[in-house]
Image (cartoon, rainbow, N blue to C red; front, side, top):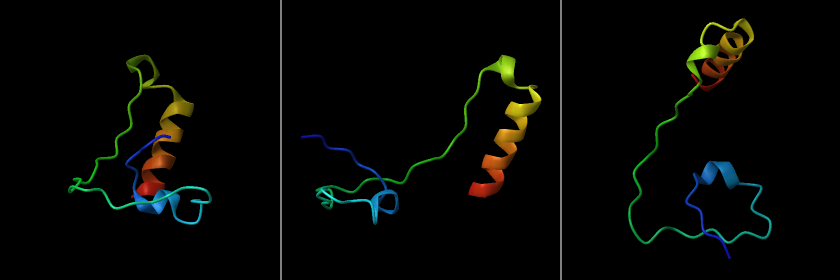
Length: 58
């Protein structure tokens, strides 16, 4: 058995075989962040991908 606190919207419709329960205590929200190695900061493809991800989640 495994337990993982995940946002409900990530498992809705994909929860076949999963049991979803409300946590017994309040859980604060979470922060989304992107992290990359400094050497990739100026790499054109990496920069493009970061821009696309930022645009989609905005």
